[in-house]
Length: 263
Image 1 (spheres, rainbow, N blue to C red):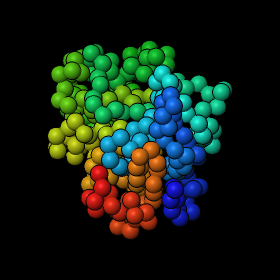
Image 2 (image 1 turned 30 degrees about the horizontal axis):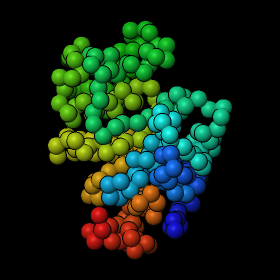
Image 3 (image 1 turned 45 degrees about the horizontal axis):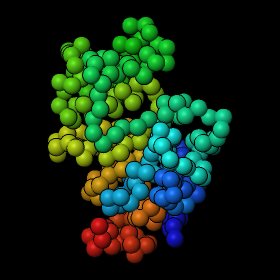
């Protein structure tokens, strides 16, 4: 049974993504069961739950990444500004530009820092050096990386530290001006200092974007998110404000997970 909490009136009005009755299948396996959730604009929404519970399966449905998985099937609605991203007329490539994604491990291209950032704009047909340079600087500043790399943009991105590489991947995502940023455990491979920088960055990004983050760390969810959704065994068990979910969960399964009795 999915527990939906009473939301403040402005959350429903300002929802950037509205997910209704989402079911995800891998062949015959029913991986996500009838999940519904609103993602507000200019908020951080965290997905928590034990390993294998469906968090990453759910987040990948929000920008049609399952289109790339053989045998995967998605049913239900995912509305971006009221438009179903799974409608036959919608181009999934366009959706992935509007809803960007940052993965668990940094995945910079074996190119220069500059070429990593402007990769997306180049594909979009932007070729002028001055315009690309402006996009690169703006994106790296938004990703809190500009001051660290501005004098070595022509160096390989692979020379950067793990935390810098992850912020570079965030800059690459921002370079195409997305509206929503999905992050699948973006700090799980990083040390505590790099993790802190990523968390500070996420807090800044929500001023301009809707951010959805999968995290294995309940402490991280508590620190950076406005809303928290708890997943268990392919089910969205509970969603509410982070303070409510962590202090007064409505579902016993949520309470058991939060207090360490499960998972």
